[in-house]
Amino acid sequence: MLGMLYLQVIKYEGNRKLEWDNFVKSSKNGHFFFYRDYMEYHSDRFQDFSLIIYNDKGNIMALLPVSIDGDTVISHGGLTFGGFVSDSKMTAAKMLDVFANVKQFLKNAGVRMFIYKCMPAIYNKYPSDEALYALFRNNAELYRRDVSFSIYLPDRLRYQEQRKRAVKKGYGHQYILQESSKYGEYIALLDKILIKYHGTHPVHSAEELRMLAEKFPNNIKLYTAEKNGRIEAGTVLFLQTGVVHTQYLANSDEGKKTGALDCLLDWLITDVYKDKTWFDFGVSCEQEGRYLNEGLAAQKEGFGARAVVHDFYRIEL
Image: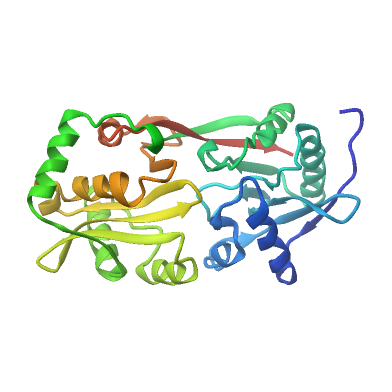
């Protein structure tokens, strides 16, 4: 880069919602997470500091969904991942300019730490690693690496024998497998499980999930395995283009004994979403990636899923 090209960087404001959402829609690495209606559902918990970067012709080059906490900016505190959103016109050289301008804008705003949560590559429509290169060029520190597990649906690996048996057992119990709107009952089951085994609660309440599902009916869906009118297993799916992501998985004690979740997942993988590209189970690690939950990872790998990393960088400004 011979010299930094000066670009216009502005903080997002509500009167730019349509402009923002339209760019997300046309981008090469956008996600429904980045639409303003999703980003702002928890605005009471995260202070938005999102940026829009324009070129010298007044056209958007990139968006940066971020929140701010003190003198730290995070991309984004309320989202699983963030990072620059760009279209097919973005190049490696242009991203270096974008990054340099954003760094200067953040410095001028009194920001001292920039935490960058990368989007896993399976979500990109086209190769989108320009920002990773810019992070390297700016001496960003890779301080956390989570590992998720995904199935490549066009050419699935075979299930391991233990998973095959569990799936067969589940179908044998004749569960009703269906899309559901029973978010209250499902979150109650999930909350009970998370408290018992992890001492925590779901990130979303039933009311929040129901509201988000109404706003994004093509992106958020609940599927359950029921018997005698009771949910024994279920999953909340987040759908984005070719990716099916299990945001939540829950299996009652009875469901564990009878393969309820296994047959539900098999139905989703082999029937409902067989024409998608990726079926992503999400992360199976803790302590900023330093601890792998091997049992949970093995369950996902048993379905033929393999590792996809989710990286976190930080830069002192």
